[in-house]
Image (cartoon, rainbow, N blue to C red; front, side, top):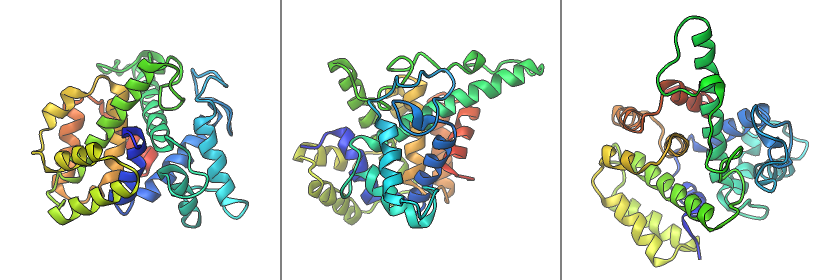
Length: 282
């Protein structure tokens, strides 16, 4: 039976914006260059402040391994068009070699990278005499994370409390994607039924299908949604997932993202880093 964590990949498969695949490829490239594949024993080194081997039982490293296996020696870049099928199959749950929880691990990594990089940029600005922006971590340290040095999601949960926290984050990520998708009123009743039907095929039970349908039908309330988000780590994951759900090519979508980032207290430096990692210029 599917849970919220499993549902992220299935939902993305059936509702992600046309540019979503290339944005995932961009994220993988940026994370790989930054050494995030080395967390938990994969490719590259560990990012600043993260101990090598402290990671998710190789969760993010396993993603890179599967992706590289799918690309073989023909393409070195996950973002290249020829390799996107392997990337998406690995992350979204389709086909052999799929990594369970892979998409949530990528979102957690994007959030961690954005918060760390924004903190480092803010520290550099303060050292140059610009002063430290309110709410930014000093010296680039973005902790404490949900799982110590490595956020839950980038590694497997170790106990019931962490599993519940991971499910809660996955639920908020899904809700954020749905809110972004309906921000310009483009989810028609037929499209809702199509998405729910595809989720059923992916193993979502009746309760999860009904929850998704209710979220798509509910009025958009950015302030109420932002109030549900417990910390900046989750807010950054939700924002990143929102950028995968939409093209950001309408004023309504841009206004929604701005309203959400303000309501969730995401600093503009963090938002900018997320855009950069996903290759979004809007």
